[in-house]
Image (cartoon, rainbow, N blue to C red; front, side, top):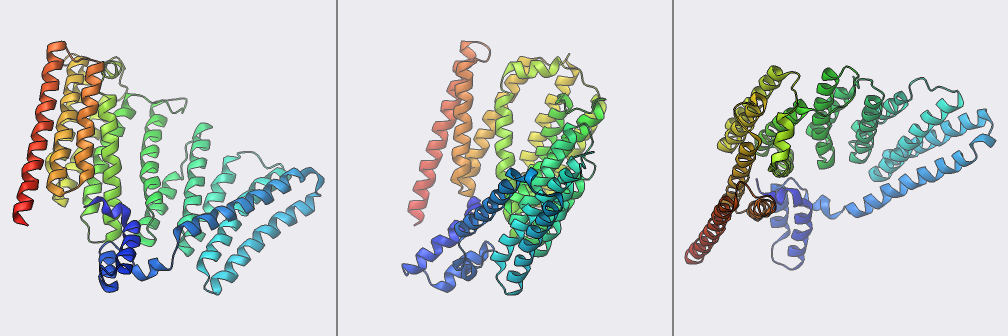
Length: 436
């Protein structure tokens, strides 16, 4: 799926310019936007910059009132404090209900957002009034839970983002106090339901993906560490790599669904998992990284290998079902499992051989992206492949693999790849000219 799906709102603005210049008709513009799941006529009536500014305005109104109350907190009688907190929360939500009934949806969302901020401040300050502080992360938990129904009822991305942000804050605070965040999967399930069934939001979707990864890693650390601290060990590295291989396969599966919302999510997830894979390959292109893993003791090696095989197997199956990049999914899974086995065995491989293997995969990935850019007509993949080749060359110039002869051969291979790509591009461009 073309990366234009990530820029579809800019596409809607551009089609409006084409209509104004009489390049296309309004019906044609509407058809183009509809292909990417955009209502052209509704888009003309909205200004996202305006709503961002209004939302930030409501946020700072809430912060200013909370600051004024906090500055005079000790001088206000307890009963007045309690009544004042309840009053401002109630008034903000009543204003939201009034605007909602009069079909002023955006104003209603802004007031409900302001009411959600007052709601959280009321929880914290009322707990302070009555000295309720036995386990303070509970306040953040109930704040997030209280905001969540509003997001579902209004289908508001703004309020949903507030709830998700609060859920993450609660997760990290709870885990930081050595308590397992038991209800965090509930937030993940509800967030998934929201973005897949109710309202599209790329930010909330990426937060969902990040939440799944963080929760899985923290659960593994909780199991391994008796003190219940998040200590990042080799098992976490292995789990993270396997999860992102699976995420990339899920991205391809989503990108080939009929629902435009799922297509957008698939494109977005595919871009970010690819970037993560490139960064990971760069990190593991150094001998010291592999040496550190090989010197580390694995606490649950059999479970780690079994889980990795299952996740990679699911990735290959999803790629096969979607009918795209089965070879790439199989190749990355094979590389990952081979490297994992060599690191764990310690007697079969050595850090330098794993470093060389990683660099080979980096070069192969660069070539694959260049060819994919040619085939699909997506410049992003083409230039990303070129960047990978250049990064590999730069890193190998700084940290030579083997000896100088080996590095010279490697640079000659890079030159052959780039010149071959240029020749192929020239030939392809010539064919297009002849066909036209």
